[in-house]
Amino acid sequence: MKIIAIGGGRIGRFSSTVRTTPLDREIVRISGKSSPRLLFLPTASAGCDEYCAAIYKQFSKRLGCKVDIMLLVNTDPERARIRDRIAWADIVYVGEGNTLRMMKTWRRHGVDHALRSAMKRDAVLCGSSAGSIAWFSWGNSDSYKTKQDPTRLARVRGLGFVDALICPHYDVEKHRRPSLKAMTKKHPGVAIALDEHCALVVHDDEYRVLASVKGRKAYRVYWKDGKYVEEPLAPSTQLRPLGPLLAK
Image 1 (tube, helix red, strand yellow):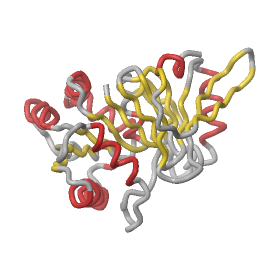
Image 2 (cartoon, rainbow, N blue to C red; image 1 turned 135 degrees about the vertical axis):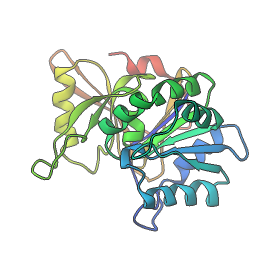
Image 3 (cartoon, one colour; image 1 turned 30 degrees about the vertical axis):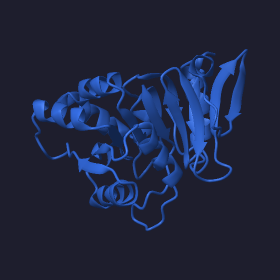
Image 4 (cartoon, rainbow, N blue to C red; image 1 turned 180 degrees about the horizontal axis):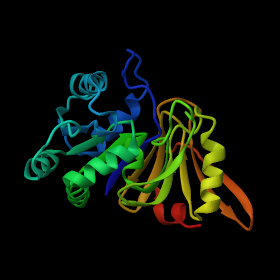
């Protein structure tokens, strides 16, 4: 299993600024290929043109990947074609956006099963925000937000490849902290919170934290004996056992 869950950040979408390059280089590196095949799934953003262009520029032009983009919103792709395109990929990168809509679309088209097969054959599964929630059992998601309630957050189910709850945008969206505190009290278990430009790298039964901006980190969050615990996880080059990270 190779998963890189990114807490959000600038990759050139709607701006020329790119601050995720060290994270993106790690995605390419752990693929084990000099010119890996990368499939971008922009389902959560409904195939935003600017986002697709930014991913293509970053991973094809700068990092030497062979990039393909699979649109699932406002299209009716055949399941066999979906399986073939995911099977083609050394890397599957999932974009930001509405996690709940993304997961419903994936399940309707059988993408969830194709991604499980990709995980089993050791493809790199990665992404930012919604694209980090995808690989976990649950995510702290803004899928239900509205103009009247723009900070509304909810617990949304992911694919469950990593058995924990994950929360992106932890440092820049200030309503995430109290929401995650309440969410983990109501639903006991360990959560991983990620600052923007910070990623949790999972390689089989080990993990490490990687950041592309100085000072960004991850957190291990849980309740114990009636107290709320938030343990900082600093970036490191050293892999550590995944089991203790997820055990309360």
